[in-house]
Image (cartoon, rainbow, N blue to C red; front, side, top):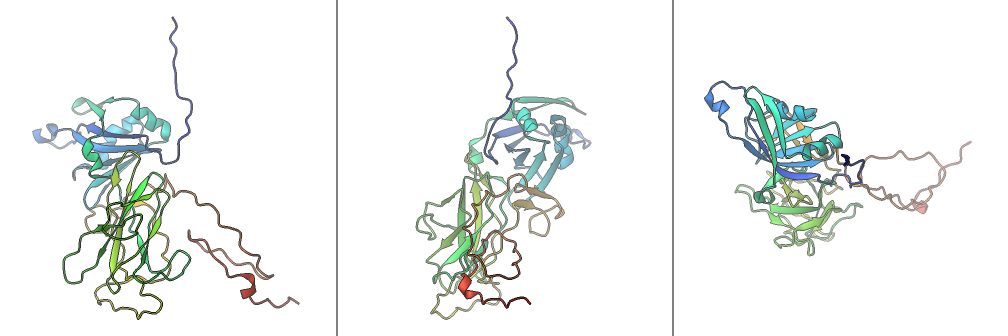
Length: 345
């Protein structure tokens, strides 16, 4: 008999597909002096693999990029970034491409040399508690507005929540809470997908959703929002930072309510596009590294493509209008609202 080798030549997968979800059993390789450093137990880190990178969660505070690269550089990785967030710490390990990530996932055990000798890192099954704890970086803070995406005023007691979509997300949870001035913060309440009200149990929005209108809110009470996302392996992200507080729409015939001076309120203009999806370390409370250190998922997995809007009515002769940035389609008035331009001599 002759030996034959079978290899995967190519594969078609949706952009942002989770290639692996597992627990990484990683030996410590610190160079600290003393027996305590040599006897440190192995780390068991929740890990996701997709595209050209791995994202690790649950890092201890003393684990840095240099220690991670002692192992991952031998597996073909280029860079490592560590960011310590509010409730967890994350690391992004970048490879040259998907083939290197697939090669890493194809082996259960990886042996490598260190000052201690030969160490072995293992890829273990996903633990059940990975579905109960945040194991992915948070989205940026969402935006709150009293106007719809087309600029129309919402009904009284309504708020528009807008967030950054992410390709690897299969669902989102949107939560709101009232801002209590001079007292402890209220509990977060989920937004029900069907009723769009707070406090109901059905709380996951579809993967192709990036905004929702929440109704039946208390007029005159400012609210703030946060968003989490879920993957197809049933893991979830850390909750985003809260949005800026905003009063619900007052209604066309209602007198706008007053807001305590210590509560900033966002404008009722249409929300600006959220920032790129990242975990940043810097001016935010609870972050311990310079602001230049980020773990970004949007660079590898940009938001899903949006179908182009319907063609606009032809404008009368005249100079062309410059394009404006932003994901919200522009809606020009009908042609009869544009006064005719004077004829050029």
